[in-house]
Amino acid sequence: MFKKILIANRGEIAVRIERACKELGIPVVAVHSTADADAMHVRLAEESVCIGGPSAKNSYLNIPSILTACEITGADAIHPGYGFLSENARFAEILEYHGITFIGPTAEHIRIMGDKIKARATAIELGFPIIPGSDRSIESEKEAQKIADEIGYPILIKATAGGGGRGMKIVHKAEMLAEAMTSARNEAQNAFGENRLYLEKYLSRPRHIEVQILADGKGNALHFGERDCSLQRRHQKIWEEAPSSILSETERTYIGNLATKAMKKINYRGVGTIELLYENKQFYFIEMNTRIQVEHPVTEMITGIDLITEQIKVAAGIPLKKTQEEIQFNGHSIECRINAESSDSFLPSPGKINYFHSPGGFGVRIDSGAYQGYFVPPFYDSLIAKLIVWGKDRSECIARLRRSLDEFVIDGIETTIPLLKKLTRSQDIIRGEYDTHWLEEYLENEENLSLSQKMGAKNPPE
Ligand code: ADP
Image (cartoon, helix red, strand yellow):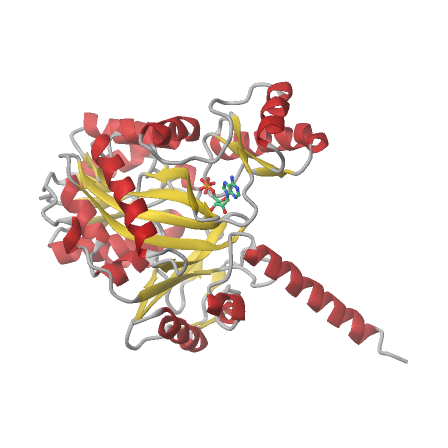
């Protein structure tokens, strides 16, 4: 096992990883930017090292600084969390060269899955159904036009290096294709430093279903069931559930086994997530994430397994001992993301948290780095807390989520709590009838309603 783990991340996920390390009896080193000197992940760690200025480029993405922090503290492994360097194949290689373990998959697997075209090709080889689309990057508008005509509109332009929902453009008719391609290229170039694009058929009413896997690089692999992450705004998840309320037991077993078989075939090591869309009872592979995901706790809540602990163990070379039959599912879990942003405009709302009261009670878990008096810095993503609840079934889980959100008080900054409270009262959500477009449509209706109410107030009937 490792002597000391350096956590190359911040916020709730750094705290989450620290907790797992402490329970394993492994000392941790926190790294932080100058803006995060007072952060919870720094306060809870045995040791901490400042690695640079506020911008992520100077700190959490600064490989030389992170290596120096390892050298100074004697850490023999790095946990990258999610985001930042977690899917950087070069970083994994550099660590290997320096004799430090990267708690994640091999650089080769990161590379294959990080390029969405290579990932699509690999998915086909592994037997996953995929969405009709281009099998290589699109060079010209003419080529795009030809493929789009073949698969039929609407189509989705995607960045091969995509992530976080960026670089995606929906095109409803041929006349819009050229402009959408230019805009997707620019967005991809800015976000990922490369601008290759490909096309996919745009599915009109899909659910987002993903399968959690764990493999040891020694031929053993397990799946931990699925998560349903269909409630999204701008292709970003805000509410995640396990299990999905729409899958049958047969579908669950089918997709889980397909994922496990695939991981064994490529001899994968680490945790990972196979992301799929599901429409008209068909699964379609969209990507694989080769790291721990924000929404992993819902899987932990229904399986009773600490995924980060398992991730650390396989990185240390300990073979998986559990069999698939030993992974049992119990009850239902929902996670919602509490972001420091306005519930209406979604504009970031950094600043000081004057009052912080988090809910508690049976089946309630908070993963957060926030506390009363904490200053939410403007430099990073706006996730400040995750509220995760468990219930014996979906309806108990929603009732518990509703009362937990009603207890949650964060003052001083705006958060997404008001929106989440409304969602727990939506009949569509209560019935489980929603797809990946539902939230955008709901928000549009809300906006129209509030506009017409404002207009009504200004122009009272005569
Ligand atoms: P990213 O890597 O940027 O997160 P993904 O490929 O994982 O991008 O897709 C994110 C979300 O975008 C999906 O959950 C889904 O809501 C939407 N999406 C992606 N591909 C399609 C598609 N072909 N049709 C409809 N929606 C899609």
